[in-house]
Image (cartoon, rainbow, N blue to C red; front, side, top):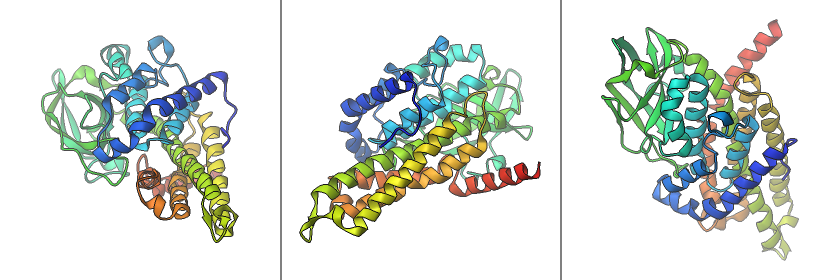
Amino acid sequence: MSEGHDPTPEHEMLREMVRGFVRDEVNAQAEASDQKQALNVPLFRRLGDLGLLGVTVPAEDGGAGMDTTAAVIVHHELAKSDPGFTLAYLAHAMLFVNNFYYSGNAEQRGRYLEKVLSGEWIAGMGMTEPGYGTDVLGMTTTAVRRGASYVLNGTKTFITNGPEGYCFLVYAKLDGRITSFLVDRGCPGFRVGNPMHKMGMRASTMSELIFENCEIPAENLLGAEGQGITHMMRNLEIERLTLAAMSLGIADRCLEIMIDYAAQRVAFGRPIHEHGQIQRFIGESYAEAEAARCLIYTVAKSVGPNRRNRVGSDAAKLFSAPIGKHIADRCMQVLGGNGYCTEYPVERFLRDAKLLEIGGGTLESHQKNLTRDLVKARAR
């Protein structure tokens, strides 16, 4: 499969490093972590050793100093082996670290950045609530200023890295305006719910975050009061691209498995790749993966801390998120009973892939966003 973009030498070196890490350390544990429904915390901290937890953080502040394309590469390559582990990485490196770095100040970075870049502190983000998912403006978690603190009340749900996480970027309404806060395990009135069991992405964990008169120091306000929507929308673009890249990773791996199996398996006296239906599965899967690859990597060039492409990132995820599921499903059909059993990772990839049509914005939300933005653009 092609890389789908014009990589710099730094991008090529990054891809080779992540591929080596996947080959040497991620592959061997993927199935066991899925079965245990547990995040491999020592392996997660190896991401810190490799400098990947701050891939988009400037080098002068301890990060890798790379761009959105680099973030896409890391998620793409990791997801070829262990999408659940990749989701934990995304929640930490994109939903917390990237957003925190570009929304916070020097004092806050001094308190948090070193430990989240090393992986000593695992992090996440709290936006979704039991009654409000895609409808983020309807959230009911509240914040009130009381002297030198803010007091939060409410519940966030489906929070990746919740069980292991030490610190979280949390959105709450302050005087009716969405505002961003840093919350960690040391804040009185904050607790984490029990792990939530999932269909897929089981190598990452998930729980509720519960705030009961939770006291947060005033210095843990991110940016200014009411700036939460700005932080959220800016970070959603890189989140959507990296989720799309995860789907592409699943698609690539399943396509490789499908091709290899079709070349070896014999039915009715011929390798099954000579049968028309198998050719359709392989041909359409390759074309879809290549189209997703080109779209994702093209849009990634136009997204960064000071560059926005909401239409592009919505389109990339809308088109690409289903690709992993579709190709995993075709792969299982080609493998038959072998694909349905755990000897091959296809059944795990198929379970994992569904989440990418939901998380970071549902497919329906991308359709809505794109229609709204395209109509506005035509009216100008």
